[in-house]
Image 1 (cartoon, rainbow, N blue to C red):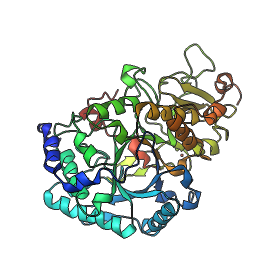
Image 2 (tube, one colour; image 1 turned 180 degrees about the vertical axis):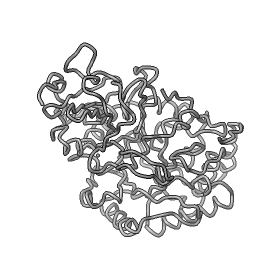
Image 3 (spheres, rainbow, N blue to C red; image 1 turned 135 degrees about the vertical axis):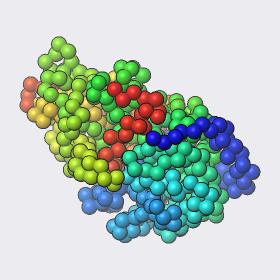
Image 4 (tube, rainbow, N blue to C red; image 1 turned 180 degrees about the horizontal axis):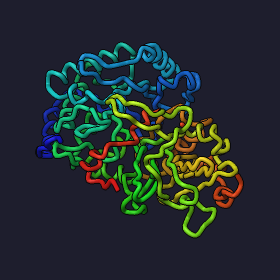
Length: 469
């Protein structure tokens, strides 16, 4: 077990103060940042899905920024890992983005690629070397930005990450050093984050993360892969709100995450809401999914068996060993198009005959249940993306970041959230595709972002003070 030692919270502020006098930071004034509420529409493009979803299939006009996933950290601070196929595709990605006046970034890390972040930023010598490595890849591929998807500073992620109690302060020092280089001064620097602020040296969420706003153009809160508990039942994997959920089922939401980050000093106009073009499935015995006393209406938080995960759609991860050598079951994920391809939804987003449907007013997300396979799925649709777009507009956030570009179907999701975050009004698409309650609830007729990330280790929740159920 890691021996978590307490350090003053003022450490982050002190680190920032040391850099405040930097003329580069003063002169820059976020020159690369788009301005205004809902000004950024971005998504990740995954190279490993390029065969099914080539660059020509991207709806470039829908986005202001696109991020290529992933380069991964390595034990050698002078090297970032890229697959051979990525080395070939990344230049094409950047060229295509620039042809469409879209900013092109590269994401570093991810669930399986964050193992060596702590080592890479763990000393002054390593930070300087890692800055050189990052700026080198930026210049080589003519990137507009880099996105740091460290899962997670100061906490164990996949299970074999190097972890240091000073990860957060070391990361901040690294970002300052990167920003103060010639390349970094004009670079779009972003981060993908958990639903709670970076932890301090005690392992608890930091009370003050305002210093990160001085070096990041924006951060995307990954409001997806939110866990459920077998004790309380299957809930939403991407809730807009969970304050109305049972106390044992409140594991994070867009509402609580934005509140936590802004309370800790991150300005709302530096925050993107991370949204998923996919959902998570659970195996639930027929009958257990129903509302008490009903023979046809889906209930909230049905009991599920965590040891019976079924393979999801074509893009889901099958069972096997992860990068730590640990055996993982299938991810059980479905992209939005996968729900249509697998016969759960019609092309207009309504439930297929024989498929039960429920829209949860608390989480503002939908669920479907297939009684023939006993599969219960939490996902997002046009209605839930519209609700999230309205939230972005109301909270004054900078925009959205969707995982991933290839998960949508005929731009249903991206159109809904773009419209809502710009106008603060429900889109016509969401109204059109929302199935009627009576038809959706009838059961008498008869999609990777590395999906092992959903099985976040128990230690993460213990350290954050969350119940595992």
